[in-house]
Amino acid sequence: ALHGPGSDAAGDGLAVEELIGGLDDGYAHVEARDEIDSLIATLSHYARRIVRMRFDGDLLQEEIAERVGISQTHVSRTLRASLQALRSRAAAGQPAT
Image 1: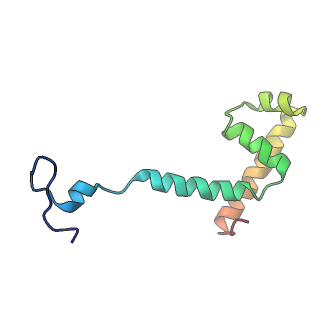
Image 2: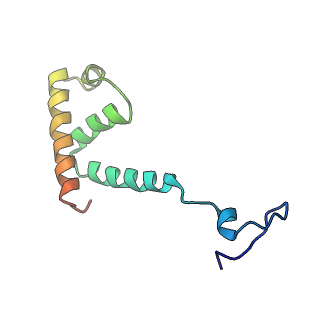
Image 3: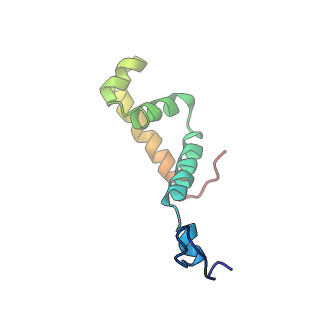
């Protein structure tokens, strides 16, 4: 039983749940990241590339524009439209494809 007495290496008589540890917040982060990745996968290749460059690559809009060969204004519009689409899909609980 998880609530029964256990023993650590020093024989201190700790409960088993104390030996096992608590919930790991890392799991929630991994699950959230998986959901975000699934939602991003629904974007066009072009929009996905720009979103990844901005948030995974931590590039400024000007840097993205230079690398992709478009204006900073176009990068801004693409990001705004992509983020709105992601918000809408997430709010609707749309299953990721």
